[in-house]
Image 1 (spheres, helix red, strand yellow):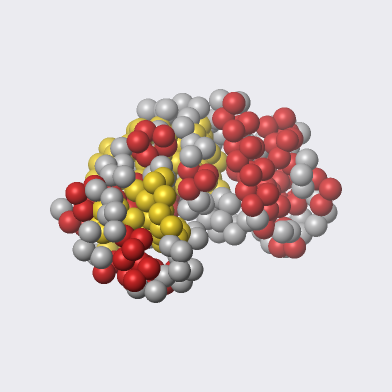
Image 2: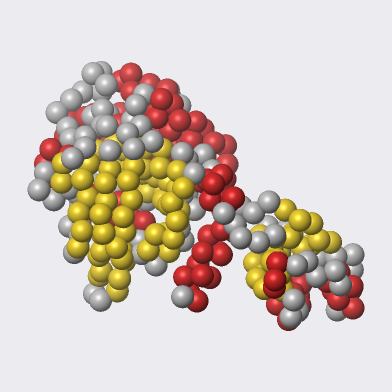
Length: 303
């Protein structure tokens, strides 16, 4: 479906993408995972024909995003990171407008959006600017789908949305995938990343790895432990001061730690108690995508 070959792009001398290559299969739900500034939005704008890469090429169904952009735009739905619909138009007016732009009608393709639109149809007379975050995202997805695209590109679609709405949104994406639509999505939430068929980890414009979420976590090279203590800030500092500790990264209510030589420090808890930590705990855990990402970033910086 999508074939990107050695894509490079820079802005005012700052490299946004560097030799990015990846393939997305038809009807695949493919995730692009990385922090702010990693290059996700730049890549999406190239895929959706809004930017021309400095080097490399992207093809979608064998059509080039530069030479064949007019034909491709009819088959791509794009939902940018920021809400970009018309705030002063109502829900139904926004939807009708986008259908008209693509030479179709809401009635013709209503079957594509019915499950999603049913959540916001009771508010169809409300101006888009007055909708909640979750309803805005659902409206934006409807507008991206109303012309029956083969590919939809979603740039962090659930950022700032409550947990229930995030869950509903991803259930909708799975249903769309079942309809044969290819989905390219970025997300900062690792619990969403594991719902993708495959993910690409990107940092500073470079792809660090591409695989199924389960396979990526299986490639973590060391045992990892969750260390808990009451004073998390001081816990991090004291762990970083310990010679046997290799990496220290805060995660939720614990700190994820690996050890030099991949050997657990049997005296660690005693060391932490001597440092004044009451009842510290250590548990061997399964690594998550965040752990893999941080390890790959560290390797990239040290190469």
